[in-house]
View (cartoon, rainbow, N blue to C red):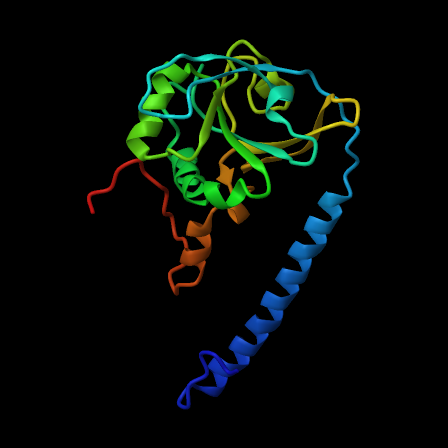
Length: 225
């Protein structure tokens, strides 16, 4: 199939488009190589069985909010992916970029849970974060607070002053029942560059298809239209 090929396109357009096709194929191959290498990571890093906080599945309910151990969230044959959402301690308001990401995760959660378990992890109190999640319509997302646990700091997503960093961490259960850290990724490639989690957010890829590209667009919690 010659998708997108038109009878009146210029020779220059076709030349660059063919170069782009080869670049796109190379990018696909590189992504697959990266994913394959990631899957080779040994599952031998035992971490503390952190105590998190979780409320009821129904976001409309105010409580109760209780303790849950990381090991209780892990099944023997399923990975647990926790998204580090920037809220709590020095991050007094929910992060707009994290909100964009969670909007997408919420729509995919019912597909994802066929293969993995997914949750959003904040540093702040769920009593304040759950109403925000309810307002956003994140009814398919499990919400956790680190509470008094040091999981965010231990994994590098919180500094000594309580400043939060965005990212994601994957955990598995070891044969002996212990909690194993498999992989973490940060959205922060540099101090002001949020490109490390682009593959988990379709917005940027849609914008990359257009002549203008991403430009200087940054997400907001609310838009005028």
